[in-house]
Structures are given as C-alpha cells and as structure tokens.
Length: 253
Image (cartoon, rainbow, N blue to C red; front, top):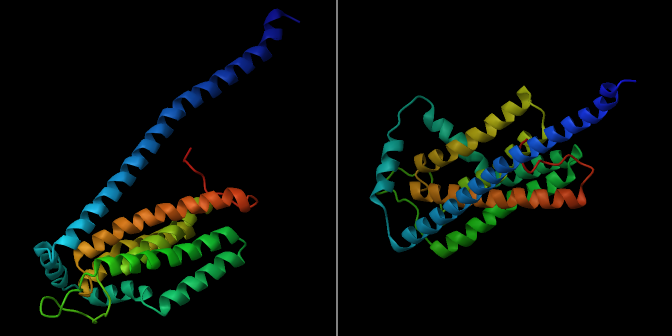
C-alpha cells in the first residue's frame, strides 16, 4: 500500500472538518445579523406603539384620520362594499368564537396538540389585551356626523379588536402552515387566505366607519408584538412537553 493511499482517508476527514468549520464560521454572522435585525424591529414596533398611544391619549382627534376614512369610503368599485363586510364578518361574535373553536378542534384532532393549545391562546389573548387597552384609552368611535357608519358599536375605538384578533390568530395559523407544512398548493392557499384577511381587515374597519386609521395602525403594531409573544410561547412549550411532534425551527438554514 502506498503512502498516498494511507493518507487519503485522513485527508478526507480533514477536508470534511474544514468544510464544517467554514460553514459554522460563515453562518454565525448571518444568524447574529438576523437576531440584531429582529431586535431592532421589535424595539421599533414597541416604540411606535408607545408613541401612538401617547398621541391618541392626549389628542382628541387627528385630521388625517378623517381624511383617510373619507378617501377609503369614496372607493366605488363593484362589490367592494360586500368584500369589506365579508372581511370583517369573522371578527364579530358569535362567529369568531365558533370559528376559533372549530379550527382548534381540527388542529387537535390531527394530532398537533401543542399547536391546538397555542392556537387557543392566540384566539383568546389578543381580545383580552384589546379590552384592557380600550378601557384605558376610552377613545370614542367615529360618529355618523363625520363619516358613514355601517353599524354603530357601543365599545371604545383604540385599538381595533378585529385587527388585533386577525394578526394574533390568523398570523399564528400562517406561522404553523409555513413552518410545519411542506411546500405545496395547499400551504400556499392557506398563507394567501390568512394574508388577505390580515391585510384587508384594517381597510375594512375604516371603510365600515367603525375605526379610525390610527386605531388600525395601533392594532397592527400591538397585534404584531402579541404574535411574537405567542410564537415564543409555542416554541418554549414545544421543546419541553411535545418533543415527539414537529417543531418549528428557530432560524432558517
């Protein structure tokens, strides 16, 4: 046996180790960058919500809110008003309770028990936080003398409960679909449906005259923070109590 043949396995191992080391050293800066970016976005979102809350609490009304509502309500596309009603409909009770219960039961029935538990949290937490913030802010809803109001509601306005519920609940369902399902037309369809409802619910609340644009913006900001907390809660419990089930990865490869 020649010397070159005896060195070949050793050289292969060395090359493999070098490749692994190279991959590790190149991946870490990327992960750190993503971590810093995530922390920056999280702090920016928190600061933006705090600033908006202060402004809403200290300022009776914003002229831009009225201008945005009148602009959106001037849209005259065929069936646009029906679309806005359909988008907002799942956020009202009792259909919101029935929809959440059905989805949670389905998730549990297919064997994703921790996902079902966290989905229940995602359905309940945003409305609870919304009520607490609304009771503190006590901001009146738009009135019929200023804009067209589809239906008068007897609750406060800031932030929008519909938007917070959609971001928290549908956002978590979208997270599950993206992380646990293989790429397919079904996953794409689910992500598209969840995305449409989350994006359009804010427009629908303004169009129906039941919220100001600042109510909607505040709800998107606060709802996003709650969604981050829900996802962290899911990952925390998944690795401790349901390790035999699929786990959503902490970072993309």
